[in-house]
Length: 368
Image 1 (cartoon, rainbow, N blue to C red):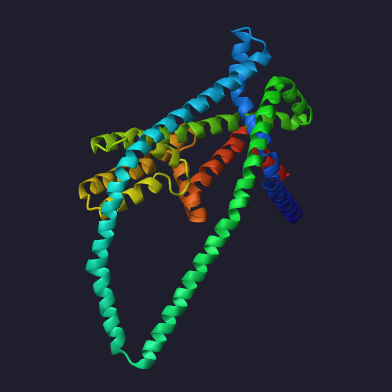
Image 2: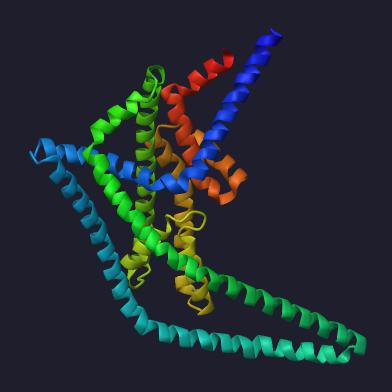
């Protein structure tokens, strides 16, 4: 009995080491293989459309691939042109409005300085002169050390920022090369998709082939569901923002909504990167009506997102809402706000492994 338990522990240790090894290899090789992974994903997305053109429209596969790739690029650049047009129109509006707002903001800062900071400074000076000589010297040295610290920190920050500029600029040629590689790899994979599938199957043991096939199928469904859920959440958020801005009669509501939809993809901050500075600025400008309106809109947005996200995710990836909610709570506890993004991914992968039977195979191996 004890020998059997020891063997089970050894097999469990082997499984854990295997997972850790795979994770380390993936992490260290990701920078080299991610263009190929992107090309495989794009080819998989394009595959049904290419087959449709090839079978229904009777087009050669070569032409079908080129037509599909060009269509995707046209859709991408069309959306980009729409965004640029909206940003250009809003820029003209801001060019006319910003000087007025900036002048109001300067007057606001001036009033704060005259009514609050200057009297406070005068009081501090009078208190300083009422202190003894030793106390004045101590305070002066403390202020000087604090000033030196701020100056050195600012200098170091500027230096480190400027040093990074050449490195950032050096990324551009590499990015163009990566994009060119992804496009060529996408074309080659799409052109020889079926043959590559057959070649891949030859390297997979027959016993593992069925489980891996089921895992890939479940992962496809789960990833599609996850992306669909995120797009649904972004669409709902955009509708709420657009409706709220129209009710509040904010100019260029569509442009602001498009920008909010883009920043909603950013983990941790999301639409807060837009609304929080905007609300603070309006409060500083004494525009209390719009400040209250935007605050209510932002609260509605946050509450609706927190309520709908577990339900929409569970509906699209086929997992009970309680499991998704519990996983997101544990993710927040372990990784902070990053857990809101990491937890659903882990849940999706775990569910795909369970549905495909891989978890049962691993458990049977451990049990012997």
